[in-house]
Length: 502
Image 1: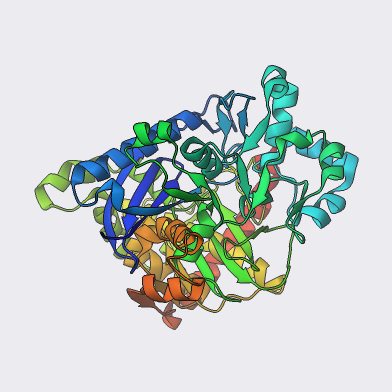
Image 2: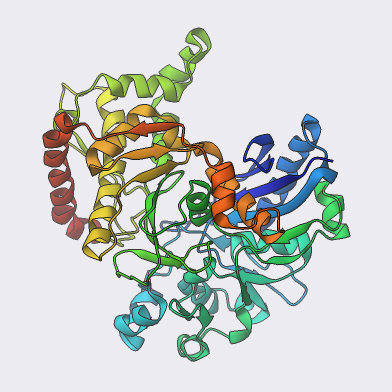
């Protein structure tokens, strides 16, 4: 019988499930969509039950394809978006929608805690600043605004932990996702119960911490009935989507760096030694004994999805005639525009911004519009703005002592040769592109393969499964135009920041 591994990715807009052979080839895949709710300014939340329904939908598509039989699955790995705050009661029922990584409703709670406890004291323990996007303030928001939820809560889970619970009944926290909590000691990888009590977080809310490749349990009879999976398949703890994508891009050694081109943007630099900077994000990698110094932005591939939805009606109408998707047509428009967009600059702060500026009030801005500008200028400005945000994070990381030499690009944005080349030109870094669309689920699968003994090491797993398909090198001819535009990008935010807060 064939030996396959299943990866499940709980993304922001959809669940993706993919079955791989042990050489990293995708044998079958499926997706399950679900909504994001934006009930108020600064709020972004989802129903974890929708995630599980998405998993069941994606798996049904895989089984219906006939490409893989359920009984051929030897192990399951799960990754998910970070910074959820899924409240479960004693019976394991979900008590409310969870605010997700884009949600900034708890800014005032952060301000009060930073003042009362001290920003430095919190940062020195957690390795991360207390900001509203993280898990900690969302849980404390429950206490203040949804006391009936807070009082009934027994445990708080992250996205992959919730799906792991639905599949196995085990309630756990993987060491990678624990960075969402500011009572987590980023040096030791353990809970700090004194800080939890100081912040007002009941210690019982905190699940047991496990390594990302540790088997947490096996598919239960109930889950087997709901998903079509055979009962008894081992499931590993999994980890953060960005970290699994980093692993799936082959980043496992000091200095290797992943560039993220999914809904969100950013980068993850693999470190052997603890290095923290309050402008960036630090977590444990899913690979034991390493950390990831990350830059996480709200503007990534989601910027182009927004632009396509709002402004690509003409392209959608013509795609049936020319056979080109609306995104491909937008890409072609952008290719005709000069580097630097003839002075048009875009700030990609479409839902506030995370690192390195940490401003929930930041807004997206097009600067430099005039009658000479076209739709192509605006598309390219979106691409360049995301690249400037990436460079901003890389520059801060380098100042903190973490230098990236080569970027490994993943996510849907990496499918655009133009956008990837823009990122290489803007950052001055060579970029390698593995199988970008499957890097995240592949990372989850590698965790399952190591955890179940199919792979003897991460080096073996990466050697067998990760293949680079393209190389991009910075074009020196574009350096001057991009450096000028980047300085405008930085100055625009500096001048507009007071207005954004008002």
